[in-house]
Amino acid sequence: MHVLILGGTTEARRLAGALAADRPADRVTSSLAGRVAEPRLPAGEVRIGGFGGPEGLAAWLREQRVDALIDATHPFAGTISRNAAVAAAEVHVPLLALRRPSWVPVEGDRWRRVGSLAGAAEVLRAEPAGRRVFLTTGRMGLAAFADLDGHAFLVRSVDAPEPPMPARTEVLLDRGPFTLDGERAVLREHRIDVVVTKDSGGAATAPKLAAARELGLPVIVVERPEPPAGLPTAPDVPAALAWLATIG
Image (cartoon, rainbow, N blue to C red; front, side):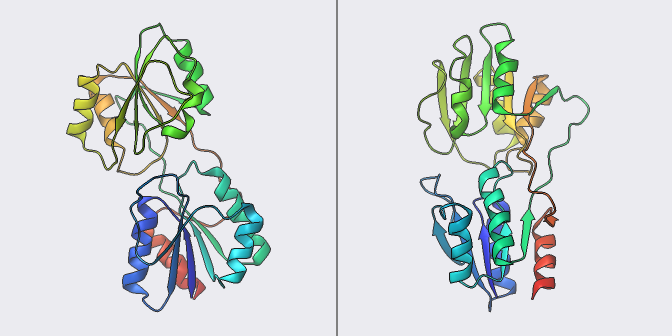
């Protein structure tokens, strides 16, 4: 069996490793978008770069005789998820969406949910000038905040971001998983007033939420886009492996 994993996430790497250990006869290919300069590579074959839209992905599935497609991309990677749904339907390849569960607020959290990065920027625009904002939404969406000159931003990303970005921006280059002690230190040392994050889910970046809760800080949470309708989904690697067992 040839399994194509659309990856780049912790779950995708764990799945590739599990398949290499448990199903060594299978061919496993992980596809990475190539947005990170030095990605953590999974077990098995790896390809880096796009496919050229749904048509290109469908052609690749045919040419490489893929038997099962698992979309284990970031919950906010909407374009590739839509392309995967179209391509899998065209080629009649079974498709599973592997998605870590969303974060759930607990007592003490001061969350405000918004539907987009633009919505998060609008919330900040209504705040009094001079806020110190910890922006943990990744380097690709900074343009949404570029005109907010009244606030100071601490932007954390794996690779250095490029303009457009807010005028008053300090960049913190780091890669998760993060610890609670480390996140407390970041929020205190940079005198953060508000945290902005995407609802990525998972444990790797969740400590910032606990640290914000402890310090009583508000958190603006960007909600996930809706996944393609009608697809089977799995919340974790064991569930994905169970689904694969039903394929072959």
